Image (cartoon, rainbow, N blue to C red; front, side):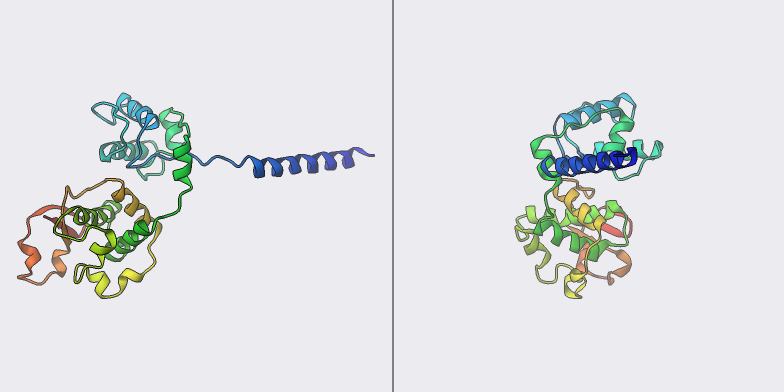
Length: 229
């Protein structure tokens, strides 16, 4: 048997082994930290951010808005993709190693829940032209209503409450949401609230003079939306 034949047989054998290993030992999903994450991985990231001057306070192991903003600043200053999440690239740049746990692996492969998808649809319908923070803010308003005794206590109940959202009335709620809107829904559900507890939002340029919503106290403005309590 000549050398070429031996080489081809060896290569085929190696490929077969690789395929077998991939079947019986599938690659572990990369750990990604985001708002709502907690644990030792978050603590390691926070310690680095504090060490490098991007985050103040203590490393409490909870990935909140302050940690997310610090990550965004770090990513922007270091030429990384800016998404406020810590995946392999950002972790490497920070000099930390993220370790996977059983719960982390499970969450990384979890499908989008029906509540998250519905909230993503509303966000897309109401705020698809807004910044990412503006999208999360719209989602947060829905969740603030869920938590309020003055509104239905489910995401679907709040969204489909009569005359609550124009996008439901005009059918835009049925549009297919983009990935940013789905992710914004998840971050809102994980606890990020850029509005500080607001129950209403509106575009001042689209509201008729004398509308009842104008009597609400505006707490913050994000993009084209005013957020009120």
